[in-house]
Every structure is written in structure tokens, then in C-alpha cells.
Length: 284
Image 1 (cartoon, one colour):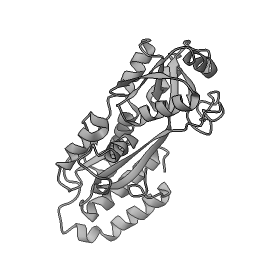
Image 2 (cartoon, helix red, strand yellow):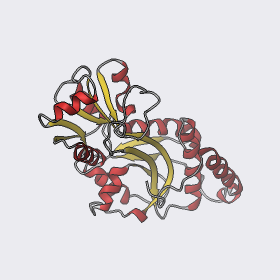
Image 3 (spheres, rainbow, N blue to C red):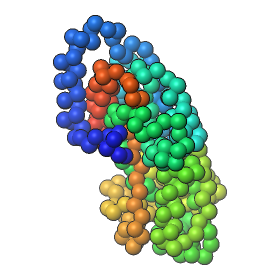
Image 4 (cartoon, rainbow, N blue to C red):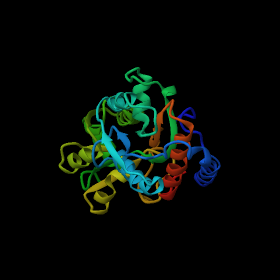
């Protein structure tokens, strides 16, 4: 994410500072309608079961308690986030619509395929920073070296989400650096990738750990390569791309934004409660 959306901060300090700010402005807030006083929509472009969908629902379940208001997830899939951005652009700037944002949205904006520009969005909180992994059906390849050897003989079918999104950029960069050719197959979300990976319809899936953790534990899916500089704590035996001499590192950063023009009081409330919320499950 760019600093224009998310200003770096430690979660605890942000939570404490934002909560203090709320207390200082409480008197003024009493003069107006209490916020929030109705359901807040959380808009996502992700399919069910994917990392973005999971992150969004985790945040929503906890933030309901912090905000003392109902929240509902609204799925607007398509166009690498373009459909979701078009949807929120039609909403009032009143704090009752927020959106989960990912690199796919930023790519879509950069390519001029969104009605919104980067300056039309205001950051609320960062949620996760998940390294991308290349995974296969358990038993399909002995290890990462075996997968690369097979890729030298034929085009592997690689599953990801959205044409032109973070997954396709990840795969294209990795293939270029590794000197292999692949056939990219887009799906609606991480859940669909997992299903088709286990079903044998594709050779490799680009996934985050959160999208396939249960299938890994069940022995159905095998993580082969972490596209990062350092190994992941939960997967200590899975090598990184850098270890293998392939300079391709990618992660999916997810956060929450709303529309520029939203009132300061509403923004302060959202920042205080969502920053407290995401820090509760280990992010900063």
C-alpha cells in the first residue's frame, strides 16, 4: 500500500491515540446524531472463502462489538475491484460504507479502469500482509525443485484470481525470473482455486496461507514455495523463492478504506474502532 492511503503506525499507539481523540470530541458529537446509528456496509470484491473474504469477515465480526452497530458484507465481484469501487462511488460520504482494499484495486486504478482515483479514498486501517505462496495438490510434486523441473518440460496450469490482478502479476514475474512458461487460469476467489487444485484441474495455485490452511493441515494441499525473503513461521520447511535463487517476492496487503469527503467525526470513530479491532488479531 502507498502512504497516501495508509500512514505507517504501531497498532497499539494508534488505538490509544484514536480512542483519546474520540473522548476529546465526544461533547461535540452529542449535538449531532450518534454515529453509527444504522448498518455499515463492508464492500469486498472477493469470492467466498478467499483470504480477502476471510479477512473482511474477521474484522466485521469483532468490529461490530467495538462499534456497537450492525455490519454486513456486500460482495461486488469483477474487474479486479472495479465493480466494488463503482458501487461505493455511488454511496453517500457518511461513514456507512467502507471497502476492503488490496493490491488488485491499486492495479485497477493505475490502469485507469476505475471510476475512483487514489485520492478519492481515505485509509482507515491496515489488516494483513500475507506472503503469496505457490501450492499444489499433495503428492503431485515431491518438492519445489521437482515442480520447477516439470515446468521446464511443459506449461504448468497455474490458478489465480482476476486477470491483471496481484496473482497474475505474481505468476508472470515468478515465471519470468525462473525461466519457465505457464498457462494462467483466473478464478473468482481463493476458495475456487483450492477446489480446482484439489480436484486436479490445475497444477499450481497462487494462495495465501489463510486461504488453504485447513487443507494443508488435512494433507490435501502442499505448499511448495513462499514468495518472500524469509520463511514463514507456520511453514518452517517450505523454502522461499529467494533461497532458490528466484528474485520474486510478493504479498497481499489488505486494509480498509472509505470515501474522501466522509466527516472527521465518522473517520475518527472508524479509525479508533477498526485499528483496535485489527490489532486484536495480530496486525499493526
